[in-house]
Length: 230
Ligand code: ADE
Image (tube, rainbow, N blue to C red; front, side):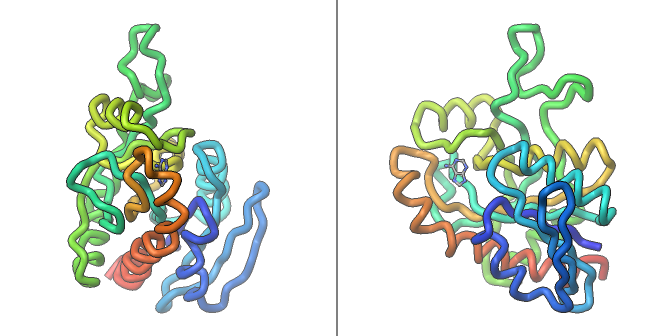
């Protein structure tokens, strides 16, 4: 079983439309679409925006469906001059940029208890995802993703996240999904296409570019499902 999580409906529409024998099931307030793509058992869900919804969805998905791997797909803001709108990224690792117990002497971003700052994505899965992008004629950027409960839309915040965590993209869910996956021992991969520059224009670019960017990521994810485990 392959699990797919997107924050917004627009980020899941294409994948959902391709699922065969699709059945809806509700768990923990989240609707899961259980079906098949190219003969592969798949479960997909729209989690909602932000880390709490993302974590709830990942936990429910793992408890109910025991996926072999979870894919987080969607859009992101760029933190890097080299990453432009509609460019595509695959995460090597992700971090929660709004987690901060540094006044207690901890490294910024560290999750207490497990004492981790970064969550590494599944190496084999991420290599496959990169290859799936290449098959579609897109060279993805393999980079670090920073998540937080913030829509980043100014230069200072953007610079802080980039400089503090070495991240190239920002969004609001993947590191929460990664955190839940880590605790449960479930591998994960992250596919994000750039919808905006996380700058002063982000609130203008995001609504315009979201659907097109989301579909670029979705196409790579569909290819991934087709090839996963072969
Ligand atoms: N998702 C897409 N663009 C984003 C941004 N600028 N900040 C946070 N999440 C995003």
